Length: 341
Image (cartoon, rainbow, N blue to C red; front, side):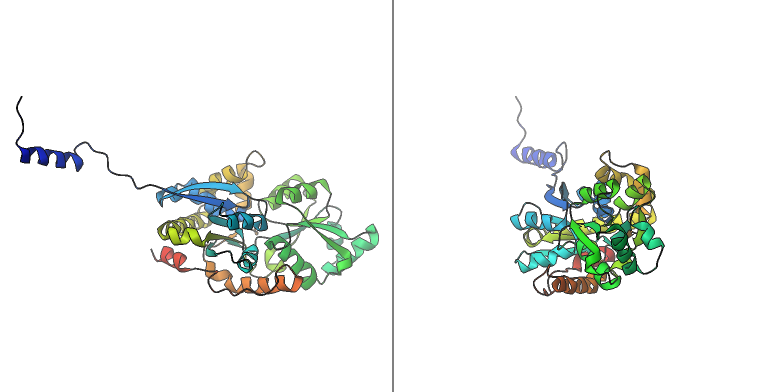
């Protein structure tokens, strides 16, 4: 048997390792556990995942669905999720409990709207004075209007209370706020178990398709001007360990937000896949994406002032003990790098 000289043997081995048959090393994907509320406001994260942009950014996402932001805060505190995709309001509460969470992107604003059911809606048609409509309803029906929303401390609850007591100037004897989950709110409204509700897309489109007598009474801008909606926040521990992964996440969200604005038809399928689950169809999701309650933005800076105002209102109604400094809550640097690219 002939043997290659030692130098030739080493050279051959080196060439093989450099690519003459060897597969290139693959960078391991970073696992990221994402908690999300199943609403249109969360559409950018679904689009980013559906288009493959999260994986392209080096992420291996896993999704867990929650009924409300306050419920998700518990998961964030226990370390069972890394990324929070839900309303901004519960994050103020989280910070009072020394939970390190950082908002790196927004997704939508002015999501929450108020709708009246078939029994309550005619009272609003009869007068432009919202407080008077509620008064007449109580006088005629013999009870206060039952209005469904999510738990205290959530954006839906805070927004509804702000509209009722501060904007419409409703007498508290004329409206009862009932806290329940998102699905329960939709079902209760359709069943007539409640008289009205604060909802967002795709619930708005779904309930009006199923019962056209359910009427939009107040838009998000009317309920709470510049209302901060869904945001994307990361736990401090995850951000410190994986800054490149967080940047990749925000890069993907910026691309997804642009797609939702410029080509909602293409963006709709991954949103329907995430939200539909046999409950709704692609046509409904397409309609919801073009709704007045679907205003997408990835820029976290645009909601800072509105968040301060919402936090101050939470303090006034007792769902937050005290104002929490905004320092450190918003980290816009990732977004600024994403758009600079």
